[in-house]
Length: 149
Image 1: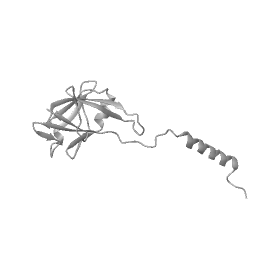
Image 2: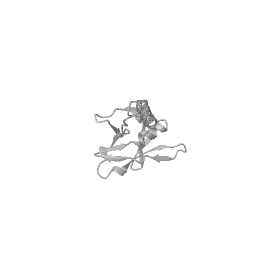
Image 3: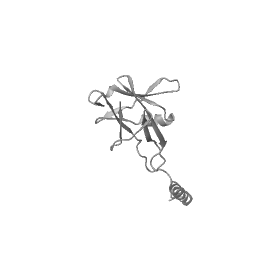
Image 4: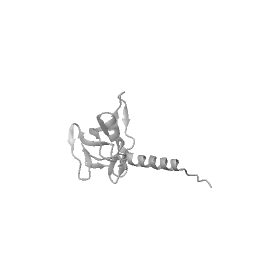
């Protein structure tokens, strides 16, 4: 009876498997989730978001044609607005001025300074500084930026 596994095929497969295994030592075995920008808006004693107020706040930037492009992933969770797309768009567009609207009217101008995080398991655009009306904003203890009037 003839064996279906020949020595050259088996040894070649084993050698190629070992080469592949040891040549991928620098490959990324992990990937962190993309960062999220957390913020609240405080205007005239009212904190947004609150029940029923999520649609009162919108964020946009001006694209190359100076038309408004709204951030589509703006969400609220437990009294905090969240967005990941704002970080990515800000970095991709070289940190443009961003407008926060309250009930359809401009409320504040923001600018995010961003960079690509090159640490292991990262690779995402990350916020290093936030400015409101050209003044630096410091996040609260929960990494939440408070945008005020």
